[in-house]
Length: 264
Ligand code: IPE
Ligand code: IPE
Ligand code: MG
Image (tube, rainbow, N blue to C red; front, top):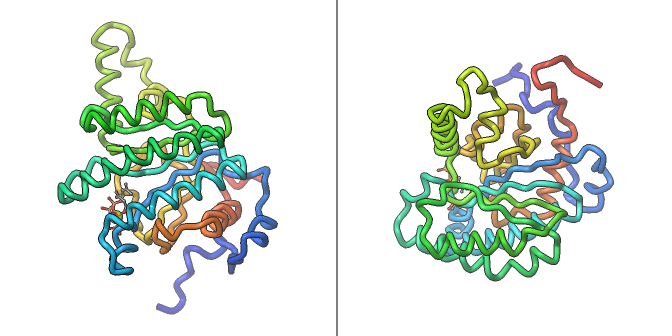
Protein backbone atom coordinates (compact mmCIF):
# COMPACT_ATOMS: atom_id res chain seq x y z
CA UNK A 1 0.00 0.00 0.00
CA UNK A 2 1.60 3.25 -1.11
CA UNK A 3 1.12 6.54 0.72
CA UNK A 4 0.61 4.92 4.10
CA UNK A 5 2.86 6.47 6.71
CA UNK A 6 5.16 4.05 8.44
CA UNK A 7 3.81 4.00 12.02
CA UNK A 8 7.29 3.26 13.31
CA UNK A 9 8.98 6.15 11.54
CA UNK A 10 11.00 8.12 14.04
CA UNK A 11 10.31 5.55 16.77
CA UNK A 12 13.49 3.64 16.04
CA UNK A 13 16.72 4.91 14.52
CA UNK A 14 16.73 4.23 10.80
CA UNK A 15 19.26 1.50 11.24
CA UNK A 16 20.38 0.16 14.56
CA UNK A 17 24.00 -0.96 14.61
CA UNK A 18 24.59 -4.66 15.11
CA UNK A 19 27.72 -4.12 17.13
CA UNK A 20 27.79 -4.00 20.91
CA UNK A 21 30.40 -1.22 21.18
CA UNK A 22 28.59 1.01 18.71
CA UNK A 23 25.30 0.46 20.52
CA UNK A 24 26.87 1.23 23.89
CA UNK A 25 28.22 4.47 22.44
CA UNK A 26 24.68 5.42 21.34
CA UNK A 27 23.15 4.66 24.73
CA UNK A 28 22.60 7.53 27.14
CA UNK A 29 23.21 6.15 30.64
CA UNK A 30 21.11 8.95 32.17
CA UNK A 31 17.87 7.94 30.51
CA UNK A 32 17.91 4.19 30.77
CA UNK A 33 14.58 2.59 31.67
CA UNK A 34 14.26 1.88 35.37
CA UNK A 35 11.98 -1.09 34.80
CA UNK A 36 12.10 -3.41 31.77
CA UNK A 37 9.47 -6.10 31.22
CA UNK A 38 10.25 -9.11 29.02
CA UNK A 39 7.96 -11.68 27.45
CA UNK A 40 10.28 -14.65 27.02
CA UNK A 41 8.52 -16.13 23.97
CA UNK A 42 9.60 -18.24 21.02
CA UNK A 43 11.41 -21.10 22.75
CA UNK A 44 9.36 -23.76 21.00
CA UNK A 45 9.81 -22.27 17.53
CA UNK A 46 13.54 -21.92 18.11
CA UNK A 47 13.82 -25.62 18.93
CA UNK A 48 11.58 -26.79 16.09
CA UNK A 49 13.62 -24.74 13.59
CA UNK A 50 16.68 -26.65 14.75
CA UNK A 51 14.95 -30.03 14.62
CA UNK A 52 15.06 -30.28 18.40
CA UNK A 53 12.29 -31.01 20.89
CA UNK A 54 10.50 -27.92 22.27
CA UNK A 55 12.05 -28.60 25.66
CA UNK A 56 15.51 -27.81 24.24
CA UNK A 57 14.18 -24.35 23.46
CA UNK A 58 13.10 -23.84 27.06
CA UNK A 59 16.55 -24.84 28.25
CA UNK A 60 18.19 -22.41 25.83
CA UNK A 61 15.78 -19.75 27.06
CA UNK A 62 17.40 -19.94 30.48
CA UNK A 63 20.78 -19.01 29.02
CA UNK A 64 19.11 -16.06 27.40
CA UNK A 65 17.65 -14.94 30.72
CA UNK A 66 21.08 -15.17 32.32
CA UNK A 67 22.63 -13.03 29.56
CA UNK A 68 19.87 -10.46 29.87
CA UNK A 69 20.14 -10.23 33.65
CA UNK A 70 23.93 -9.87 33.42
CA UNK A 71 23.66 -6.98 30.97
CA UNK A 72 20.94 -5.42 33.09
CA UNK A 73 23.26 -5.49 36.09
CA UNK A 74 26.17 -4.09 34.04
CA UNK A 75 24.07 -1.21 32.76
CA UNK A 76 22.47 -0.44 36.10
CA UNK A 77 18.86 -1.24 35.19
CA UNK A 78 17.01 -1.43 38.48
CA UNK A 79 14.16 -3.84 37.69
CA UNK A 80 13.66 -6.62 35.16
CA UNK A 81 10.33 -8.46 35.04
CA UNK A 82 10.49 -11.67 33.03
CA UNK A 83 7.36 -13.61 32.04
CA UNK A 84 8.23 -17.29 32.41
CA UNK A 85 4.91 -19.14 32.69
CA UNK A 86 1.40 -17.79 32.27
CA UNK A 87 -1.86 -18.84 33.91
CA UNK A 88 -2.85 -20.01 30.40
CA UNK A 89 0.26 -22.13 29.86
CA UNK A 90 -1.34 -24.98 31.87
CA UNK A 91 -3.26 -25.66 28.63
CA UNK A 92 -0.12 -27.19 27.16
CA UNK A 93 0.53 -30.95 27.14
CA UNK A 94 1.25 -32.20 30.67
CA UNK A 95 4.76 -33.34 29.66
CA UNK A 96 5.70 -29.81 28.63
CA UNK A 97 4.16 -28.29 31.77
CA UNK A 98 6.06 -30.79 33.96
CA UNK A 99 9.26 -30.05 32.12
CA UNK A 100 8.83 -26.31 32.65
CA UNK A 101 8.07 -26.75 36.35
CA UNK A 102 11.12 -28.96 36.84
CA UNK A 103 13.24 -26.55 34.84
CA UNK A 104 12.26 -23.74 37.19
CA UNK A 105 13.37 -25.80 40.19
CA UNK A 106 16.64 -26.66 38.45
CA UNK A 107 17.16 -23.00 37.50
CA UNK A 108 16.48 -21.84 41.03
CA UNK A 109 19.09 -24.11 42.55
CA UNK A 110 21.70 -23.69 39.85
CA UNK A 111 21.53 -19.91 39.55
CA UNK A 112 21.29 -18.87 43.21
CA UNK A 113 25.03 -18.41 43.68
CA UNK A 114 25.51 -16.48 40.46
CA UNK A 115 22.54 -14.23 41.16
CA UNK A 116 23.79 -13.56 44.68
CA UNK A 117 27.26 -12.69 43.44
CA UNK A 118 25.74 -10.29 40.91
CA UNK A 119 23.66 -8.55 43.58
CA UNK A 120 20.37 -9.69 42.05
CA UNK A 121 17.30 -10.01 44.25
CA UNK A 122 14.64 -12.36 42.91
CA UNK A 123 10.94 -12.06 43.52
CA UNK A 124 8.57 -14.65 42.11
CA UNK A 125 5.27 -13.09 41.07
CA UNK A 126 2.12 -14.96 40.14
CA UNK A 127 -0.53 -17.13 41.70
CA UNK A 128 1.38 -19.31 44.16
CA UNK A 129 -1.56 -21.38 45.33
CA UNK A 130 -1.53 -23.55 42.19
CA UNK A 131 2.21 -24.15 42.04
CA UNK A 132 3.51 -27.67 42.77
CA UNK A 133 5.13 -27.82 46.24
CA UNK A 134 8.63 -28.29 44.80
CA UNK A 135 8.27 -25.15 42.69
CA UNK A 136 6.89 -23.18 45.61
CA UNK A 137 9.78 -24.30 47.82
CA UNK A 138 12.33 -23.39 45.13
CA UNK A 139 10.71 -19.98 44.67
CA UNK A 140 10.81 -19.30 48.40
CA UNK A 141 14.42 -20.37 48.65
CA UNK A 142 15.40 -18.24 45.65
CA UNK A 143 13.74 -15.22 47.26
CA UNK A 144 15.18 -15.87 50.70
CA UNK A 145 18.74 -16.46 49.56
CA UNK A 146 18.87 -13.49 47.21
CA UNK A 147 17.05 -11.12 49.59
CA UNK A 148 20.12 -8.97 50.19
CA UNK A 149 20.70 -8.17 46.49
CA UNK A 150 20.62 -4.43 45.83
CA UNK A 151 21.80 -4.08 42.21
CA UNK A 152 18.83 -5.42 40.30
CA UNK A 153 15.39 -6.75 41.19
CA UNK A 154 14.39 -9.69 39.00
CA UNK A 155 10.65 -10.32 39.04
CA UNK A 156 10.10 -13.82 37.70
CA UNK A 157 6.51 -14.22 36.60
CA UNK A 158 5.52 -17.83 37.17
CA UNK A 159 1.87 -18.84 36.90
CA UNK A 160 1.30 -15.17 36.27
CA UNK A 161 -1.79 -13.76 34.58
CA UNK A 162 -2.68 -10.10 34.71
CA UNK A 163 -6.40 -10.77 34.89
CA UNK A 164 -5.81 -13.13 37.80
CA UNK A 165 -3.59 -10.55 39.47
CA UNK A 166 -6.27 -7.87 39.16
CA UNK A 167 -8.96 -10.30 40.35
CA UNK A 168 -6.91 -11.17 43.44
CA UNK A 169 -6.32 -7.48 44.12
CA UNK A 170 -10.05 -6.75 43.89
CA UNK A 171 -10.77 -9.58 46.33
CA UNK A 172 -8.18 -8.33 48.82
CA UNK A 173 -9.59 -4.80 48.61
CA UNK A 174 -13.15 -6.10 49.01
CA UNK A 175 -12.13 -7.98 52.15
CA UNK A 176 -10.72 -4.77 53.63
CA UNK A 177 -13.93 -2.91 52.80
CA UNK A 178 -15.98 -5.70 54.34
CA UNK A 179 -13.85 -5.62 57.49
CA UNK A 180 -14.45 -1.87 57.76
CA UNK A 181 -10.73 -1.09 57.23
CA UNK A 182 -11.27 0.80 53.98
CA UNK A 183 -14.11 2.90 52.61
CA UNK A 184 -15.05 2.49 48.93
CA UNK A 185 -14.50 6.22 48.41
CA UNK A 186 -10.91 5.89 49.58
CA UNK A 187 -10.08 3.40 46.79
CA UNK A 188 -8.01 5.11 44.14
CA UNK A 189 -5.56 3.99 41.46
CA UNK A 190 -2.78 3.71 44.02
CA UNK A 191 -4.87 1.40 46.18
CA UNK A 192 -5.27 -0.94 43.23
CA UNK A 193 -1.62 -0.70 42.15
CA UNK A 194 -0.43 -1.48 45.68
CA UNK A 195 -2.52 -4.65 45.77
CA UNK A 196 -0.93 -6.02 42.58
CA UNK A 197 2.10 -8.33 42.77
CA UNK A 198 4.25 -5.37 41.71
CA UNK A 199 3.15 -3.40 44.79
CA UNK A 200 4.98 -0.10 45.05
CA UNK A 201 7.31 -0.72 42.09
CA UNK A 202 7.30 1.80 39.25
CA UNK A 203 5.47 0.66 36.10
CA UNK A 204 7.65 -0.79 33.34
CA UNK A 205 9.15 1.87 31.08
CA UNK A 206 9.80 -0.64 28.31
CA UNK A 207 8.22 -3.95 27.31
CA UNK A 208 10.34 -6.20 25.09
CA UNK A 209 8.32 -8.78 23.17
CA UNK A 210 10.50 -11.24 21.22
CA UNK A 211 9.19 -13.82 18.73
CA UNK A 212 7.28 -11.20 16.76
CA UNK A 213 3.84 -11.59 18.34
CA UNK A 214 1.92 -8.34 18.45
CA UNK A 215 0.10 -9.00 21.70
CA UNK A 216 0.72 -8.79 25.43
CA UNK A 217 -0.56 -12.29 26.26
CA UNK A 218 -2.08 -11.34 29.65
CA UNK A 219 1.10 -9.74 30.99
CA UNK A 220 0.95 -6.63 33.21
CA UNK A 221 -2.36 -5.31 31.82
CA UNK A 222 -2.59 -2.64 34.50
CA UNK A 223 1.09 -1.75 34.66
CA UNK A 224 1.58 -1.35 30.89
CA UNK A 225 -0.70 1.71 30.61
CA UNK A 226 2.12 3.99 29.39
CA UNK A 227 4.90 1.49 28.77
CA UNK A 228 6.84 1.76 25.50
CA UNK A 229 6.41 -1.43 23.46
CA UNK A 230 9.29 -2.99 21.53
CA UNK A 231 8.57 -6.04 19.39
CA UNK A 232 11.35 -8.00 17.74
CA UNK A 233 11.14 -11.11 15.55
CA UNK A 234 14.16 -12.60 17.34
CA UNK A 235 13.17 -15.76 19.21
CA UNK A 236 13.85 -15.60 22.95
CA UNK A 237 16.71 -18.16 23.00
CA UNK A 238 18.52 -16.08 20.35
CA UNK A 239 17.92 -12.78 22.16
CA UNK A 240 21.43 -11.60 23.00
CA UNK A 241 23.27 -8.55 24.31
CA UNK A 242 23.05 -6.79 20.95
CA UNK A 243 19.27 -7.35 20.80
CA UNK A 244 18.83 -5.99 24.32
CA UNK A 245 20.99 -2.95 23.56
CA UNK A 246 19.04 -2.32 20.34
CA UNK A 247 15.79 -2.33 22.33
CA UNK A 248 17.27 0.14 24.81
CA UNK A 249 18.56 2.48 22.09
CA UNK A 250 15.17 2.33 20.34
CA UNK A 251 13.50 3.13 23.67
CA UNK A 252 15.64 6.22 24.03
CA UNK A 253 14.30 7.48 20.70
CA UNK A 254 10.72 7.43 21.93
CA UNK A 255 8.97 10.54 23.09
CA UNK A 256 6.98 9.73 26.22
CA UNK A 257 4.04 12.03 26.82
CA UNK A 258 1.82 10.21 29.34
CA UNK A 259 -1.20 11.88 27.79
CA UNK A 260 0.24 15.36 28.16
CA UNK A 261 1.99 17.52 25.60
CA UNK A 262 5.49 17.06 24.29
CA UNK A 263 7.93 18.05 26.99
CA UNK A 264 11.61 18.77 26.47
C1 IPE B 1 7.89 -19.29 25.68
O1 IPE B 1 8.14 -20.05 24.56
C2 IPE B 1 7.98 -20.09 26.95
C3 IPE B 1 6.68 -20.31 27.62
C4 IPE B 1 5.55 -19.79 27.26
C5 IPE B 1 6.69 -21.17 28.77
P1 IPE B 1 7.01 -20.89 23.85
O2 IPE B 1 7.02 -22.26 24.42
O3 IPE B 1 5.70 -20.20 23.93
O4 IPE B 1 7.54 -20.91 22.38
P2 IPE B 1 6.70 -20.79 21.04
O5 IPE B 1 5.85 -19.56 21.16
O6 IPE B 1 5.88 -22.04 20.93
O7 IPE B 1 7.73 -20.68 19.98
C1 IPE C 1 3.56 -15.71 26.62
O1 IPE C 1 3.89 -16.65 25.67
C2 IPE C 1 3.83 -16.29 27.98
C3 IPE C 1 5.21 -16.46 28.33
C4 IPE C 1 6.22 -16.15 27.58
C5 IPE C 1 5.44 -17.03 29.60
P1 IPE C 1 2.78 -17.61 25.05
O2 IPE C 1 3.45 -18.45 24.04
O3 IPE C 1 2.05 -18.32 26.13
O4 IPE C 1 1.81 -16.55 24.39
P2 IPE C 1 0.73 -16.72 23.24
O5 IPE C 1 -0.11 -17.93 23.58
O6 IPE C 1 1.48 -16.90 21.96
O7 IPE C 1 -0.02 -15.43 23.29
MG1 MG D 1 4.77 -18.88 22.71
